Image (cartoon, rainbow, N blue to C red; front, side, top):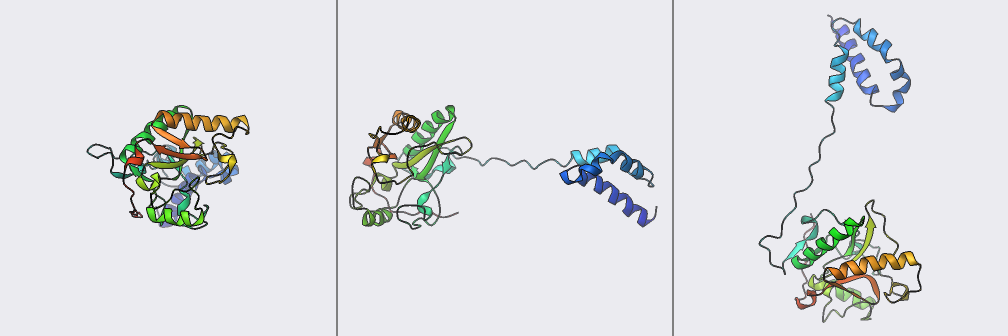
Length: 256
């Protein structure tokens, strides 16, 4: 068999392989028996079964899930990166963007750190949420104390921002700002955006559509069941009941 015949054979085979995977080859695919018959007339052309086997071997690559860490051997007050211990959360870390009330990016990169005891409680709460077809989405977690000073300078009102001298429970790794999303990532309607400073964000504001009240109730009651408590003026903010006992921290995480 000369080289030109070999090349012709290879072109026909690869043409057939390509057309079985491209929608744009619909018309050609319909006449594939004729093409196959022409291919068989070439010297030493491979059979149809070889073509099928070739296609069958083109399987999608299997992506292995990340290996998660365990809390074994870690003290409850140790700071951890939450994503290392669970892959079931969603994130929109606002202070790593300009989409926040500061209108400035104050985190070098988006990460959610908490104390171990906070992480354990969050994972337990999220497990219950998942059974209802929703999960936690984070806006903020541990917050370095220097960022608290920036916030206080813009909004020096303890109803909304903790005085940085005393420190926020965010600075202690015991507070999170969260909402709920469905399993496709769509946020449940909570009535306002994150960091909305006004009465519409208050827990005791019942002058809202029932769907919003039900969504807030689901978030609040489930979080409280797992050791968190809310603050009246922010539907998104939750403190671990034992989080206020820890020291204010000011470390910044490494960006990976």
